[in-house]
Length: 143
Image (cartoon, rainbow, N blue to C red):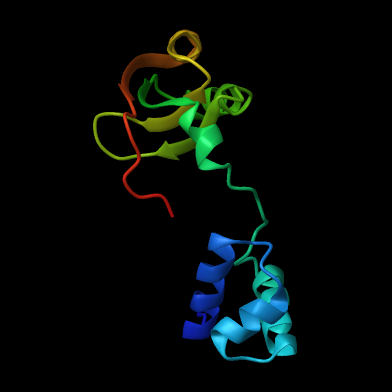
């Protein structure tokens, strides 16, 4: 599927603020409001836009302790471990990766002790052989 440069610009604007009014998007893109609305509907219909979410405030995010948890799995444990990690609300994102680890989970908790507990829970999941955690000290770029 190919998308135009204007579609890419539209997606960029929506990723900054998915609630931006169509009229404002149209002004920023130099297009008519109906054209922008049609492009959004097409991007949704074609599956380019899969949904909309929220971005938490910096004040709220600063109150959370985050970590990257690198996970090594036992053979054939991916589906089961993924399902169990999905059930943990503290797991924000889960990536399959190449290299000596199989997965990277991005986790967030309200305190170091809560983070410690969630990392222990991840390590106790049947099929998780090993974890290695790195606590995020600060975020330099977030898009």
